[in-house]
Length: 293
Image 1 (cartoon, helix red, strand yellow):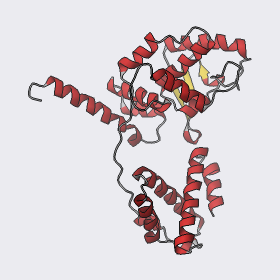
Image 2 (tube, one colour):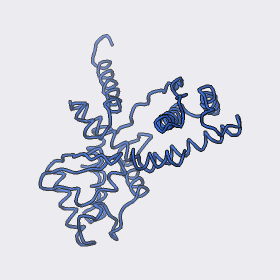
Image 3 (cartoon, helix red, strand yellow):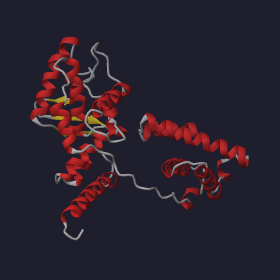
């Protein structure tokens, strides 16, 4: 049933290729455990004791709580699928409790550092420099994901209404507004771009000097290179710029639900993690300002 389950994830749930690969890997690992330790090949023989022993064993071998929870999520989704398909009558995952995870606050770049990046760093005035700047600005101005940026097409940019249409996880579309200043950068970039390849609706928006689509490795290197010029934060990545976008909006009074929509989060709990950064900031201000702190 694993193959049917994978097809279900791909075509009915429309999970991303990365998520499907992760689920498939988890199930292969679980199947190997069942055959090696319990000699089980029949799905109906699996109970919560067996599943719990697998999870405990993984954690004892230094698997993080986050990774363990992902594997639990895989099994929960799989057994719900089996129940729906009538393969099993009992869901053993109902008695499985996920291990608690230590909450890691999102890493973000301070507002002054971002200002320094765009006001003080010389990106150059040619196509390459403008594109590099625009990639960084796009992450910071819109909060989009790396995969979303790479797959942006010319048709997704609406310079008349100052909006970008983004296709996120599970092919869910959202519209993100942008400022006139950012729009002027887009227009300037487009003028350069027209000289190196013919623009059309199916053209990828961000391209290399030879007109080819940019890739993840290219963007990672670019982000690390420029962020290293202005900040010493340990982690430097496109996702850090997404965190920076959300944190700065929240710190400046943006509504949490509005940030949720801009980020393309499925539920508010995923967005609420940014409130912890705000609380920490308030605590620092309190300690510095209160006479008895």
